[in-house]
Length: 340
Ligand code: FA5
Image (tube, rainbow, N blue to C red; front, side):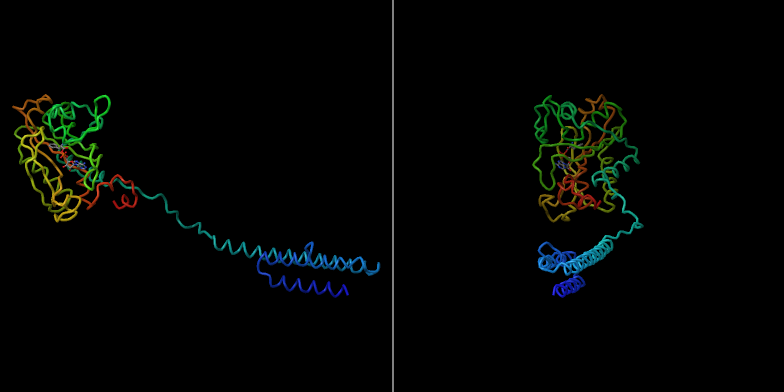
């Protein structure tokens, strides 16, 4: 009777093994047939009731069936594992001959690009490029520019003062004085750089932005010279006709002084947050260098005169690329920066 049960168990286990498709299913077959509470264990319980000669025969049979099943289960497991590995290798296949993409190429910041273009242009017209400190003295930022301590013009530029009475320069104009002091007239110079003001930030105002100072000191320099250089600058940057207007402007270090505004290129003059709905953007104040400034720099105003301008470089980049919010420049957002 036990022979029949053993061969039935064997046949059933082989059938189940053949149809098992996962390792879990194979394990279930093993537990059902060979586990501690499995069918073979059930059958073995009857073993004690057998006659001694039968016991030897059935014992042998049980051992053979057990060994057979164990080996068949191992084989099935191994083949399922091999198939799983093949599938995984197929899925994770990498073509090692594909060329690597390499590092992503960087690019210059849009303000730096415009700055370099303006520098190249002015260098080609014989101007020297000068640099000045960002932490400035009160003397160079204000006094030598004819803005004494009690002058209301100081209020036009809300200043970050340091504890030792030095300050973060509010404009690039101090480099006019430093340049002329050091190099003397005749002089044609530009000075690009970062400036700082305690400003309410909005689409066209930053607390940290770039200006580019320009100055020419020689004999008989006139407003016509100044307009020539500013026009040349604008057509080189925009490669097309842009509408500008020149209106009187007050700066204690020039006389006469002007404001050069550009027709807003974000809205084509129709009015937008960048131009504060006016259609015009203040871009480049300018004028003839005030005799007092020449005197501060050691140049005799009876002999020398000149023009100066202070270009809003960050705003120029906004107009050049049609950027409608100045805060994007300092956002560090690569989605913005990689467009240039
Ligand atoms: C000056 O800073 C004068 N030093 C310019 C000057 C130089 C006049 C030489 C005469 C002779 P103003 O404060 O207007 O001027 O600033 C100059 C330009 O900088 C503005 O026309 C504008 O384009 C830009 N600018 C001013 N404030 C900001 C700001 N908060 N954010 C971005 N750009 C600004």
